[in-house]
Length: 311
Image (spheres, helix red, strand yellow):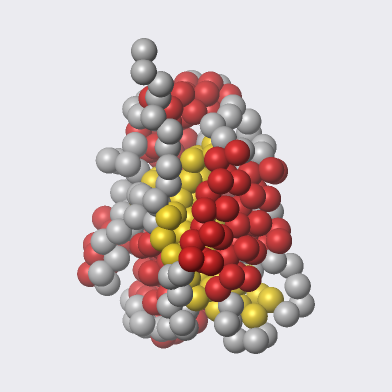
């Protein structure tokens, strides 16, 4: 039997030194049993480095960024009131460990605060309440109209958990095992992990989106400004920010976690004026709900890329 071919990521970089950084990040991830794709781009110089940058993967909660942009654009257009009260009933809301998804009693929250909960603590119930106001198909169509064809929005957040339960019952550890096994086999028992059905994006498409948001070149300026503010409120710092904590740096980001997926996208801004957008999308090869070493590897890669790209 012939040996299985060795996977080699396709690295991209502006010069040899940047290529060395891309290859080092890819090697570090591979040593941890992580398959992934990565892109970091200086928003002003355009210099970038990464690997497998056009590989599209399920986004998990990273999809909340394009959802927020579409909702915020409707608010900026006067089509949606940010003060509109929305009641979320736990008996009917989405699954999740944070925010309204973890509530035990009905709560009424304004649209603007649903956006804050969705982006700051990755609240699935808040996200699906916003999908009630701006349906999935409308979000996907708006992204297409903006030229964001590399990002697809196909389902609500709770559909991920419904599909996992359909494949594994209430056994989340079994669902994780199925996700890891299917990743190796190239098949998808859980529908929302199948690129043909999932909310989908690639590092290049996501970094393009961040670049346009930071340059006010997509949606209305009021919408992009508010998205930047809300992404700066994220409370999770175990990935991109883990190696970029400093008084001279600001990181605005959004994580995405589901079964074996561990992602984050964001923009690192320095007092020097350097601004680097990063998209790190990973799938682990282990049956573990917690993997702080993978989170840290994402952060180390982001720091190495930022240091290499800053002017």
